[in-house]
Image (cartoon, rainbow over all chains, first blue to last red; front, top):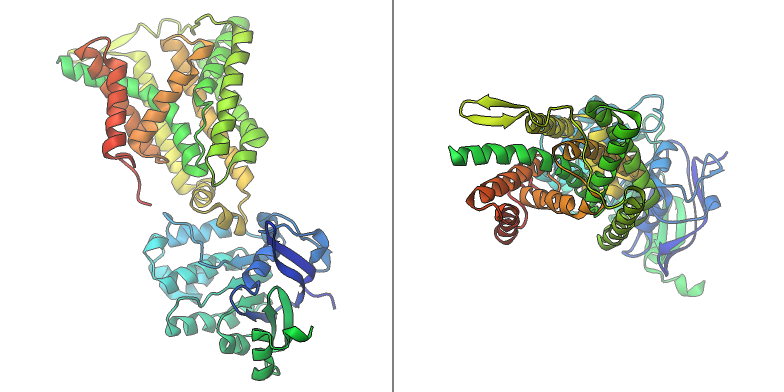
Amino acid sequence: MTPLLSTHGLIAGYGDMRALHGIDLSVNAGETVALIGANGAGKSTLLRAIMGLLPVAPEMIRLDGQPVGGRAPHRMVREGLAIVPEGRRLFTGMSVEENLRVASEHAAKPVAEPWTLERVYTLFPILKEKSRTPVENLSGGQQQMVSIGRGLLAQPRILLCDEISLGLAPKVVREIYAALPEITANGTALVLVEQDVGLAQRASHRLYCLLEGRVTLHGSSAEISRDAISTAYFGASHALD
Amino acid sequence: MHWIDGIVQGVLLGGLYAQYALGMALMFGVMKIVNVTHGDLVVLLALIGISLANVAGLGPWAVLATLVPIGAALGWLLQRALLNRVVGDDPLPSLIATFGLSIALQNAMLVIWSADTRSLSGGGIQQASIALGPIFVGVLPLIVLICATVLTGGLDAVMRYTRFGRSLRAASADVEAAAMVGVNPRNVYAAATAIAVGILGFAATFQAMRSTVAPADGPFQLIYAFEAVIIGGLGSIWGAFAGAMILGISQAIGFRISPGFGILAGHLVFLAVLAIRPQGIFQRKA
């Protein structure tokens, strides 16, 4: 079966600094895949490269088997990719609803059950209450909900989530993670970059561990042992390569 | 009465400055570009309009109706061919590019139209005036002010309530994040500059009707637009309008203090704002 999204020897970086040294990854429809790894392992870079925010060669990224690498981000949205970026990156000076509408007005062709403002408000009821509030006046958790809602309204087949739990209270993190099954229910795939390894393992079907721009471990989240993860995470086996 | 008349005339003058300033405020607000060719584009459009009037026999309103789409097309082309290559976090490349283009445009206009000053015939409307109580108000300046107000309100409404306006504001807040939700920044930028230069079609027509234009006049129009935008607060649409009014009133009152003092009074108010409130009087909340 052709995976929905796959990367093939993906190499990317910033200027002269190469951050990814050949990543092979695949994501199937409806699947939740977690990316774990220490700071600087290349997790965010990988998501940015997939989203079209970093220059890559066409055949390094495939959607439905078709090479799409190197296309501009707005064209990746049309192909069915969306990202909840690190740091949320909301449109300041605009209300919650306006932030969401920018996404819905430039969305990919809707999937079977398209995301609507109403569905996002059902998923995160607090946003309906705050729909007229400028986003800069929201709490961190509420801002993260807007950012996720914005990603969903792009009608993605694959939603890339970059550290959605970062800096949030545990209760808010639980609230946000509780919403994820609703997102994957209609076949949307999730790629989660997560600092909290336990959380990543519980929330995903499969996980990839990155270390210094390489995949050091991947497999079924339920079957991978803690020891294997810590070895891959900290690189004890790295010297053996 | 002398002073009230000064303020009224200043507001009317501010109407013309507002038409210069709107496009500059839009371009700065969305792209952080200070377009140095702004004044030269006013002059270019005015000269095209005057030539159209002379060659094709167009009346002033037909000239206006022609210059707005020509301006929009020029703006679109300017963004696509040049500014999209230099836009970015660093303001210097766009400043240098538009500065160079400004000089090239002035020289090109000098070749085509020579250094003569020209104006556009308004068919008598320039001399017409109406009495508001004891104050006489020119019909043309009144039309200019009404157009400026409608343009400002219209642009503000577009920014607030339309899909295009939302994508402009999103790109202005965080262009990369806007691209991540499907906005094509190059299209949005091209449309913004098309609107900015399209509005200059109004400014060019009215400038050519109420005064004269010559190829080297651009920098003067640029400085008025720039001052109005700075006084009002960079990037704010109604701020630019208010800044234009303040500039117009300062000049009109300065002119009544002493005929040679008018223009200087405007510059002094601009410098005072820059010194006391550099973010501008009406800067919107960040």
